[in-house]
Length: 504
Image (cartoon, rainbow, N blue to C red; front, side, top):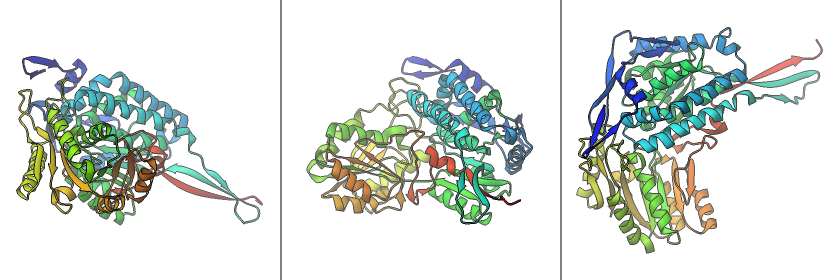
């Protein structure tokens, strides 16, 4: 298959094309199986509207099968439970090596399935997924307990770190492979078994990952992959008595429902949810750096990022200049098909998402906001995809829906401010608390402001940095728990305390 871009064509990686040419089953208990109800779905390239491939869709009974397979693989006598930590690490390293070998193929699958530019899919999504596997592989044989000096004579007390059990991993459509590995790597390093449910729109790289898991030699049932609608599979994965842990990334509304259902079974839950992050530019900032950073914070991945810097607060003396420069930057960005090497921003994921984003912009301009740049876009490459131009809005109130609600698109609201305490209060005036950015040459000012912001990540003179070792998550309705870092590993472990009477 080739995709037309102007008068040229772009070839799909041959291994990715072979993947698209096959149909795909569910991965349960180490085997590829048909769904019990025979359901299937079509993956569509959001940049062209063309069908990529078909894949099996699980129903609730299939989810039960997957949970039971994961529970069997977690049995005390199973090969996985008998495996040493070093052997678990070796499997994770092997999986990372296989992903690296197939990095270009994975990038093409991810780009075409999700709409992100190919270079981003290759150099960020796939590359960072591999880093996560290797980082947590290194932790597998370092999960130590402790000897506790208790005040009981002739008694030894120690703690052991043990896997929590079966983990349900529910991932979103904006970073399908990367977030799957955010969750999969620590779960497997800890010794858990998993059921991975990819998003309905972007299930393909999870299925290719399952093929690599099989090739790496993981025991049957340790990793199970069941694409399907969250409305049907979610309740099973959250409520099944064999599931001990749920790790979810997605909308706040769905996260709230997961928390309610999981509470009944007293299950362990981590939630990484929505955001409406403030990005703050002071008058003393390096404006070249700040404008480029602000553009990247909102237009990366077409704004479909939970931590996107969608509220830009600019100190009043430089407000007009920043608005002008950002508008020029937005207008110059090339929107197009994700395989076009000139593409800087791809399509949105679905027609419903495009409609939602354009409705927000239309409502804002109807209420008096100034459209400085952007709005609904015709693709520049002649392909009929789901495109939205990078959009900048000014003259917007703090209490406007577009300022307060998560739009999840390439839409930036620019707001003036007059002082540090004022901007701290306004930045915190949100039900979310995921991330914030600060742009200033005054490091004391940056440190003071960062201490006032009620968010999980603060970026100073940068935005959106990520590393497998650095925890990521939010305050307030942005969720609880953390992905990445040693802290994430802790959420897949339990502490067991062992007492031994030394007199016997």
